[in-house]
Each structure stands twice: as C-alpha cells, then as structure tokens.
Image (cartoon, rainbow, N blue to C red; front, side):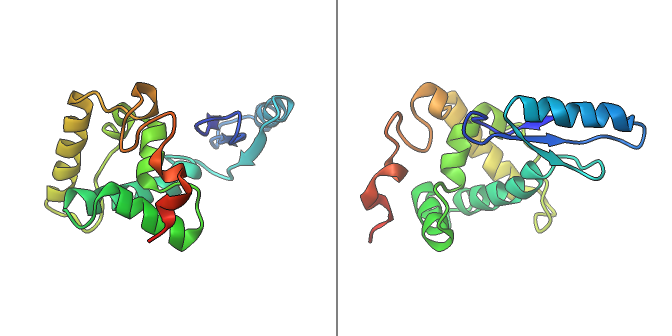
Length: 159
C-alpha cells in the first residue's frame, strides 16, 4: 500500500499485489484502506512507482531538466504549468512538498539524456539546495518561502 503526500487531503491508498499475493489478503488491504477513509486505488499488476509516481516522476524530471539547463527558472516553469493546465501547483511547488532530500534520491535516468549530462546537472543543482538547507516546506524555504508560498499569491499567475 502506498500513500500520497498529505494523506489528510490527498486520501489515496494505492494497493498493489503480486502474482503470489493471496486475493483474500489483497481484499483485506482494500478494506483496511477504506476503513481509514482512504480511496483505494487498486492496481491490476505490479508497477514500480505505483500509478501516482509513474505519472508524477516524468513531470518532475521535465521541470528539473528545464531548470538545470537554464531554459527557465522554477517560478516560470510552475507558472506555465499552473496556467496551462489549471493545476494548483507546478513541479517545483510539488518538489517543495516532497522535499529536496527525497527528490535528490529519485532516479533521474531519462530517455533523451543518453550521456547523463542533464541528470548530473539536476543532481548538482539539487545538492546545492540541500547544502544550503533549502529542503522545501520542512525548512520553511525551498523553491518558495513558507508558510505563504508565492505560488499561492493571486498575482503569481498574472502577467
């Protein structure tokens, strides 16, 4: 069973068995999740990263790649994502929620980066933030300042 960050808001519990998982045990986990007030997301087969992280990781790597290669700064990347999709947060606001320590351990191998230069640039930039104590929400500063991050300001999405 895998929970999203801020489970009190994002109340999903991804449930994954294996071919060897007893179906009664699997159903017990589904029931357990429901009894906790979670929405059970039942996977039909094993998937590294479950559903959420399988979709989230490419977004995060794309955002970090744009930043690491100096295409755009984190606020511009988030603003673009938020305006274009209507999402409440962009990849860097999500990174702040996840935390720099977690983000730096996520595998950065990505198609289109055969020599690993972009992954190395991302890791170096994240390491500098880690060294500077910019851990995200937990330290009060990441790509934004907390408890009132700039992306929540109504003017953030304006020209």
